[in-house]
Length: 297
Image 1 (cartoon, rainbow, N blue to C red):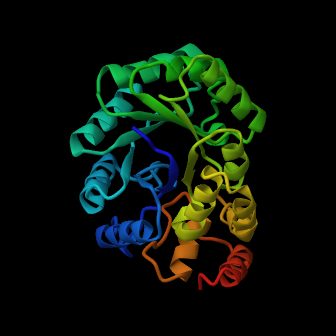
Image 2 (cartoon, rainbow, N blue to C red):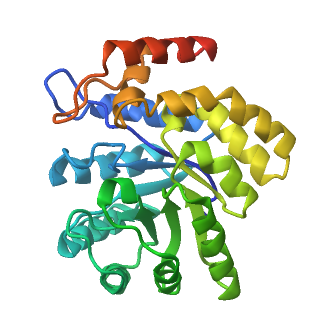
């Protein structure tokens, strides 16, 4: 299955009484589709998976599949630091009809590299849904190394990795390893850092799972499509057009700035759940300037 292009790691909108805003979620899904994205990820880390309950997570997967209704790709956030828990979410995503499950490397327990291989083997041996590995060492404390990625990529139904390590040389090494093994048609690398998406595509990766796409899906999709089509002159221009947005959305912990941006734009978002806290006033001022410059507010 092909997950090329721009997938948005969607924020989870909350109501004022701290429930998942189901109607707001449906509105955001349609807004993203109308602005040209290729896929939507629900209940991932940008969706505050650390502070939503499993019941909420399962409900959000159902809403995603129902509202998208086959128009674009649907990816369910399904990771945990417990392999058994992750498998339960993967199996739920499969039953719900999602196109893929995103499974983060287990956080906190710092599994060994061979433990990571067995974690992903467990997912694919007990389900039939395509699995996207998510490597984000700044959040998890674990970095899946190049040789381990190659071992995992060789497993049936592991179709991609969302690579959020900032090390571009690692991206090159991974791409070379995948090509040497002849797996480039079965396994793709996707950017997990918006600001590195353009250079990563120039190295042979196939797209992004994006935070910026929540706020400016049209320009983010345009940049990725330009780069994937080989029109790097246009892609460079679009990259620098939205570069300040790429940076300001990480001025404090994700997804705090992204949700504040959507609130400023009048889109469903609401608050972030504790222990995340509201965006500081000086950060709000920076964010407002960038949104005004892009005519988003």
